[in-house]
Amino acid sequence: MLKKSSMSVPFFRYGYLYARYKEEIDRILADVMSRGAFILQKDLAEFENDLAQYVGAKHAIGVSDGTNAMLLGFWALGLPKGSEVIMCSHTYVATAAAAYFAGLKPVPVDMDDDRMISTAAVEAAITERTSAVMPTQLNGRTAKMDALMSICQKHELVLVEDAAQGLGSRYRNKMAGTFGAFGTYSFYPAKTLGCFGDGGALVTNDDDIAMKVKRLRDHGRDEDGRFVCWGTNSRLDNLQAAILKFKLSRFDDDVVKYRRAIAARYCQNLNDVADIGLPPSPNEDADHFDVYQNFEIEAESRDQLREFLKERGIGTLIQWNGQPLHRLKSLGLERPLPRTERFFQRCLMLPIYPGLSMDEVDYVCEMIRQFYGYN
Ligand SMILES: *Cc1c(COP(=O)(O)O)cnc(C)c1O
Image (cartoon, rainbow, N blue to C red):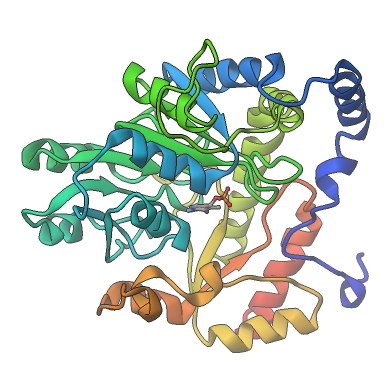
């Protein structure tokens, strides 16, 4: 048996990102660096090709991070200044910030029981100033995109996706990020496809958006190096791209499969605990294929449970530091959203990542069961 009392299960293991593939990573770094290939080189182009192919989009463009991917996407779209972008309150501040810095107004709305944006809330929030709807493909799940697409069609709104957490997840067999005008991913180390620093990408089927984003990320330069529009510096490092290309080739087998296996184990072990609300399990319905960026539960006496687990060496996290968009008063986003409000009294994320053993998952579950008096 395991010595449970001495177990330490951190919320995430950053060091494992390197340890797992040390040999391959060392080889890639040495190769790229000895070629002196740092900015906008072939490794980036190859990664972009592979990513586009993986998600089934015409174009993928590597950028500095997920936040700038959204910002550049909005700049390329050129929506009317001051127009409103409807998004889920249960998202990172970056989603709203991207809209804000593109001169748009973020409008947070309530969530549904599966934690995704509520389609009813989206419809209710539409005004004559609305220009776009931007679901966040949260926790590695893709929202019910058919409903959102038909709302957008009906009201002539642009659909865009913050798929920072959604890479590889699917709704009705279509990949997160590929439903609207553009979709964006983040390669922040703790994301499912994490690099060794910041990184992000935008995917689109629209040639014009792709061309604009390529210019915007590189000082407004076209393929011939001429400055043809205003731009900024938001390039994905070639070194990161080379690592991401390698990791993407192992993504389904090494990451997605394992995360889904952990999620299934959590669901199986905690299914009968009445004090806990579980996220949808991996094979709950045929429409969704989830990749479990996070395993976010709802828990009775959440703060006490968190403390109890901490004392037993288990790291947990409350998403967005407990601050969904509608709580950000200083940013002018405050409004009453009862479903999201209630959720944030109760939500907690459990450890889930390659590098977490099934024994550790069982230990986490055992401690949760102990806390609620189950055995
Ligand atoms: C991580 C994340 C972002 C930001 O991505 P960065 O690469 O850190 O800029 C945006 N939205 C969501 C939902 C995220 O989880």
